[in-house]
Length: 176
Image (cartoon, rainbow, N blue to C red; front, side):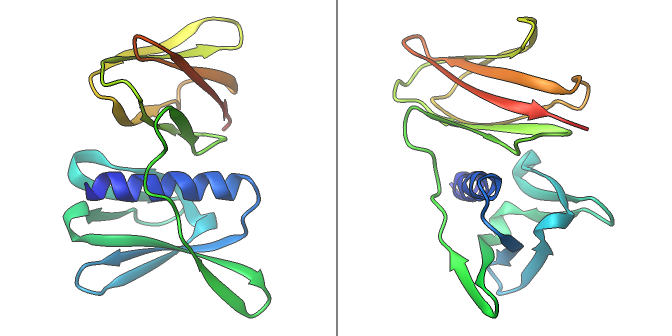
């Protein structure tokens, strides 16, 4: 549950940041009260392997925190010089909505999707040339799936999810 909540918050954060939100820090808040602020510009990627939150930094040692110890993620923005506001982020996408982040992606792209039909989902990533570069069958109507795209060439890729009834699509830009 906490993984879904944190992942949804991070999805929203990355969406907001891609449309111009002037974020300064992402702060990991642990249940014991410890907080770890991280400058947004220093984050390379966020992943969720084996019940952990891993924050890979552009420089320095990555941060890894067990999700069972995390009580939340805070995003602080500067809206006016000297004024800091806490941004409340939604925890999950609405049914039938597909979110891809980060966008543009360098090493990994995360797909966050909640289907309105409870069935297996076929996932495909297709290049602009029409070549299928990734396929997988996912067995849940709610998906948080991270894909390694580091080996892909730079360009625009389409992501297609088919739940047996409807095809949902999105796109991301792969850059170095």
